[in-house]
Image (cartoon, rainbow, N blue to C red; front, side, top):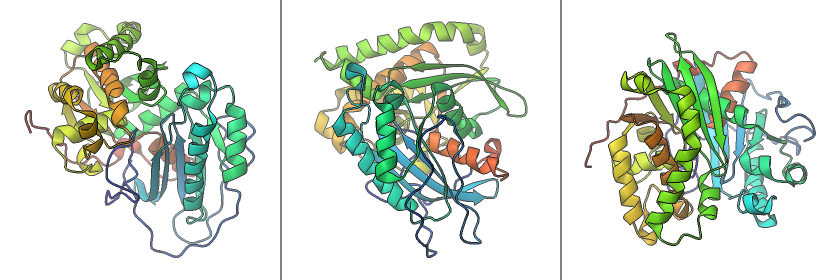
Length: 397
């Protein structure tokens, strides 16, 4: 996707919160706006992949589109309008809500987590009222997929915010992430695309033809994200031991998938590329670049070498908690989740021992926006989206 943005955070210090796309992408539109009705969408009942109800634009400007991604860790909003062959972001929001807190153990969303998520969604609702005519799609992922009280939560969200939240399945989640990241793929015929979330990790094995079109051969959704993995291994007090235990679990979960889809000959011939989209990967890249504050335009599309990723892993495992929280590319809200993210990332590198991966600071929200715009006939071609100059990260910055 082509995004035109000044890469500034609208609500705090620049840092990747948990996923591929940052809240710092907003370009505030200075044009006056008018109020929109209280109800932002339709009735929450119905199929989880139902198309959103359009709200007709009230101005002559290009139409507005909005995407909300409510994950196990974060709530994120992106508002944009079509621009050339991509889109221009005009507003964004991201907040850590930890909706998936305890859901694996208890089987349901706890009240405190739901309250945090709804408060964040109220902020999204308020922002959407500043952008009349926006066509919205709001999705929820792993935490809601596994929670017994998901239907009650979806109804409560609608009642309190007017937002119609749809719970999507892992295949749809992977499709949207791939659609967002496809512009970062090069001419190599195969690709591993992964997204480390709060409640799950998705891995896609992709075939790329000579026109740059992609075919997803197989998707694996593991119920192992940074939040649930952190909770599950909390009983292991020794940090290095905990890291290695998490790394081993993920590696074991990946073996069958990798053996079905990728032989050593393909890897050795340089036919496989890798794209990573997650807060873990963007954080690793920011640290490796030595950024004094997180800057999306320096991270998105960068090449991260595996040896640099290993060096950052060792740095994180030696870093004291206070220093980790104070790091400009990590922050207080994500610090305790970094070990789990590092373990998942390390296991992926173990299974696919390539030299580099492409870092994507983009994800579900961008994929949703492409879907919505293309459905309305806009010439949005993610394969021709913006590719900024790659940052080659030095071995010892």
